[in-house]
Image (cartoon, rainbow, N blue to C red):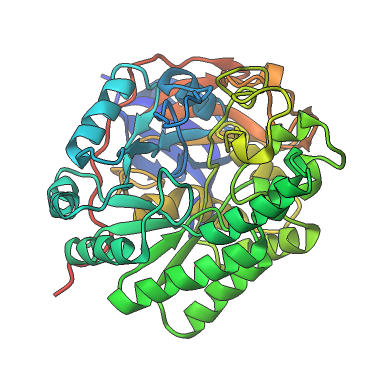
Length: 471
């Protein structure tokens, strides 16, 4: 009888802490043995990694799939196309958002999102919960949903349909602190955005490029400082999501220096795009890159790279939220030349997140391979209560693995990607790395240029609380 379902031979194994060569034995979807050498005759199948890097499958802890909206816009990806795209780019676990509408219970929001995901995902997934209505009844629900395995909550400081007041944010932080859960905060000053938007529009400045001016780094800096202050007041850790600017990063440095427990996240758009990608003229084409916060200038871009390397950022996520460009329910929701503030916010990034960071980060020696693993897999798995099942190459962990090609010359073209989006903001960018094989619980979902996953094979994951329960 064979001892293993699969052996990966001659692997250059990279974890968040170590790098070494060995063989990986996989049984029933989990890693059962890691050894210097395993007898390949004991396996039903053998993959020779030939010294290639093998990393944990990516954990993308910030993506939006089939998320309902209040404005009539419809995202390009559902759980079929989104998880397919993720798998083909080396991501084996995603955590999208169950969004609560105002007046809706958290339980109803979660139930609706389960219906949207049921039977569609090809890789494993968990849910964050977006809180847009922090009524007393909703605050009372928080401990219950945490016990059910939903241990992370997203709070917005901007967008009329989503934002909470500081008072309500404090109530949410207090409830999550008592239960050991974490709150994620979108930190932009809503009044700054609306004030700047009004003045730009009065001057006739409505093209996509003015989105970057309306969403000023000053507004991000202020909201970041305010979010940190609210967390300090309640004495609770928070995660600041999609940090984009040097100004916001400096607030995180300051908070860490004060001993405040702040986690932070950034995304590919702040490394590989700048405000110029929203347009250098008044054409609508720049709407493809409208997201919030927007890409910044090269100074902020350099600051983001430095913060990735020095440990300031905890995790690296895609914030995948694609809207088709040529679509009346997408970027052209309000017409071909709509004002920037009426364009749905979001770009695609699930499939390109890991290849971009491996190419430009690891291969160009901006970050180590171990740091890459921590940012993209281990740290998000820990922060959201999925470790060591996910984000690890260890005995007993799920056999979610990526075998990398790191000596290629590939041009990113949307036609080659597996999203339903009709464009990628990274069109034409060169990468030198791409997954050769992606394994989800020991099964190939991407191999040698072909998608091999199956809708419905992905399992829903309940999350543990990441922090000790407060007294």
